[in-house]
Amino acid sequence: MSTQPVLVWCEIPVRNLKKACEFYSKTYGYEVKITEDGPNPTAVLNNETDVPAGNLYVGEPGAGGGVTVHLALAHGDTVEAASARATEAGATITGPLVEMPFGRWTYATDPDGNSIGLFQAAG
Image: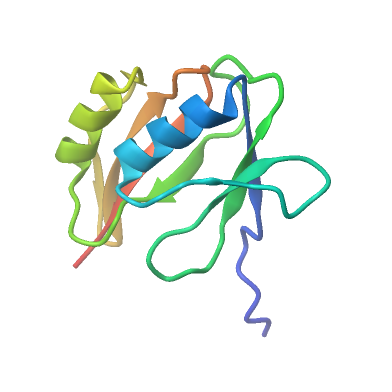
């Protein structure tokens, strides 16, 4: 059996990388900053585990269609608090609060119209 996670990487297209970094940092509770490590500027998404999960890049957003990327909130954060911050930062909360044994989340669209999940792990 493989130890490779099912989701290896995600890329979220945004119109303005600096503004998107501010939104994702404020919403998820960890720093998202621009890096010049690759061929184009991007902003790597990772939390306090320092295990990157994807990146933001300058591109054409999907206007709420397509895949929904669920990103974990900072340790100890709540869906309710993140939803309030996300709304204040320009997101629209689009879904109900969903609770499962492994965690809870709600759906939103970021200021660029990308479908995102605000995920709080159980425990």
